[in-house]
Image 1 (spheres, helix red, strand yellow):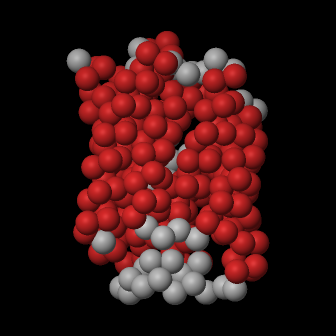
Image 2: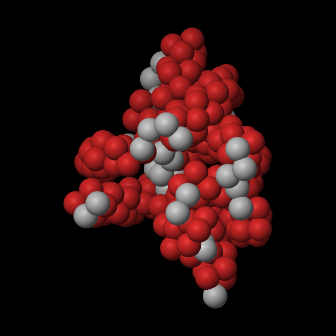
Image 3: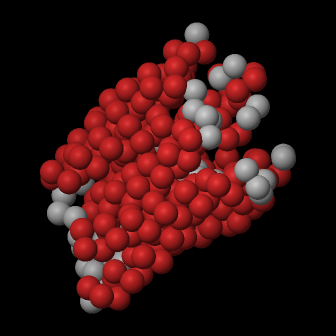
Amino acid sequence: MDFALLLCAAFLAGFIDSVAGGGGLIQLPALFLWLPAGPAGVIATVFGTNKLSSICGTSMAVTQYARRVRLNWRTVLPAALVAFVFSFLGARTVALIHSQIMKPLVLVLLVAVAVYTFARKDLGEYHAPRFAPRPERLLGLLVGAVIGFYDGFFGPGTGSFLMFIFIGGFGFEFLQASASARVVNLATNLSAVGYFAATDHILYRYALPMGVCNVLGSLAGTRLAILKGNRFVRGLFLVVVTAMILRFGWEVLHP
C-alpha cells in the first residue's frame, strides 16, 4: 500500500513540477512518510531517492518544452551549466550543515513571491526581456550559481523560485519561464543525483518505479501547460507557492 502511495505521489509531483515547480512539496513528504523507517531516517538517502525520481520527470518536461516553446539557449544553457556545478557543492554541504536552518528564510521568500505575483496581474503575460544579451547571460550565471547551490543543499521550491526569477527578473512570460526553469532544474538534479549515487544514498528499488510515474505526470503537465498557456501556468504557480507557504509556515512554527 505504501509503495502504491509513493507511485501516486510521484505522478502528481511530476505533473505539478512540469508546470509550476514545487514537485518536491509532494514527493519529499511522501518519501518521509512511506519509505521504511530505516531509510526514511537518513536525510541524504531520502533526498537522493527524490532526486533520481525527479530527474526523470524533469527530463521529459525539458524535451516537451524544447519542441514547442522557443527557449533563449544563450542565457539558459550557461545558467544550467553553472547550476550543475553549484548543485554538487550544495549536495556536498548537506552532510556538513543541517539544512533545516533554511526553512524560515525560504518561508519569507515564498511569501514575497506570492504577494508580488498576485499584486502584478500582468506579470508574465507577455514576453518582454529586460536586458541586452550579454547582461542577461551574466545574470543567468549568477542565478545558476545561487539556485544550483540551493537545490543541491535543500531543494523544495527550486522550480518555483526559478520561474519567478525568469519572470520578474528577466521579463519572460510564464510559459517560457516554466520551460527555462525546467532546463536549469534538470542540470541541478543531474548534479545532485551524481553525488548521491556516488555516496550510495539512492534507493533504486523505489526511485526507478517512481521515476516512471514522474515521467507520466510530467508528460501530462507539460502538454496541459502548452495547451492552456500563461494564465493556467500562473494560476497553478500561485496555488503551488501558497501550498509551500502553508507547509513551511507549519514546520517553522511546529519544528
